[in-house]
Image 1 (cartoon, protein in one colour):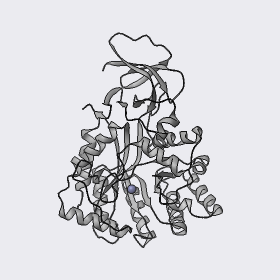
Image 2 (cartoon, helix red, strand yellow):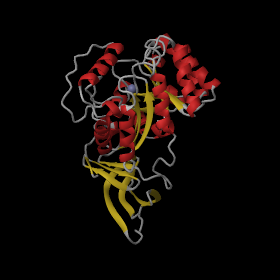
Image 3 (cartoon, rainbow, N blue to C red):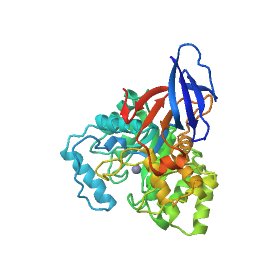
Image 4 (cartoon, rainbow, N blue to C red):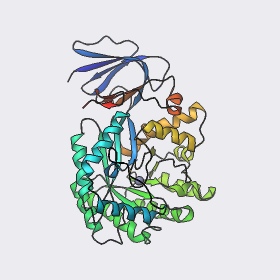
Length: 396
Ligand SMILES: [Zn+2]
């Protein structure tokens, strides 16, 4: 594999430019001026910012309609209606989850994403079709994107007999995490739901990532049950709660107690920073040592028409939602879409130091705050030192 010398880039938005030598897919040397070894390709960085490859810590690439005919959304807002509408859509439309997951993954790569944790629907109507589709995409794009997969009982586990077996099968096929969904408000039996998904995690030696949209005290109760099971089953450090709106809704003493439990069990939080719901208290979670990642959630599906897979745009939405205006506040959003995701996904060799994988994005701008406040479209994306996308286009 040919070496690459990236010239004149500003690592993590630092004012001074550096050269970065990449050998065998890893960063080997960083210095203000590096003499290129023989047979090294030289790429001029033009003093652009170099950031670690973006991480989408919560996605649903199996169901995106990116590149398909526009879906006219007429669904009401309650969760069971949205889920039932989605199943109905699939009964009446041909949907190729491999093609669609690849399309949205390529779009994400073109915007600078190098790692995605994606939740994949498993239910008694589609069976394992979406798992097969996403796993095929994972294999196909292995050189350009790291995909971590969560099998996800979107339509519920308890009310639809057979789903648990399908989840078991999905884990056997190679899914990395066990998913779950609102154990009280949607499943209506929190103990049974959580016991079932934690049993699957134990059986397959996998972690858990559970969607928790439940509000206030109901959600807080679920957080307690999840924390208890994490402790009892020895899954410390291997559980993520996605959304966790309730953490932003309960009163402060209650919030403090929940955060102590999460920190104690090293349970991570994934947020999409939604504009219409309370959000987990980002700074307080980080101060308690809790790992926090950000995600785009569904992009252009029957749930929501919004988004284009750009994690810088998600960082901007975080800044708006958390009312961050100072540059050092806004920089927290960059952490959420880079290092925070790496911590949650336990990635080896992530970052911009010698020894790390050369997964990085070059963007034009003066500072990190500027590119989050106004994400530029002109990006060059490197995966393992290879240029995989440039100016919004995948090169493969
Ligand atoms: Zn989700």
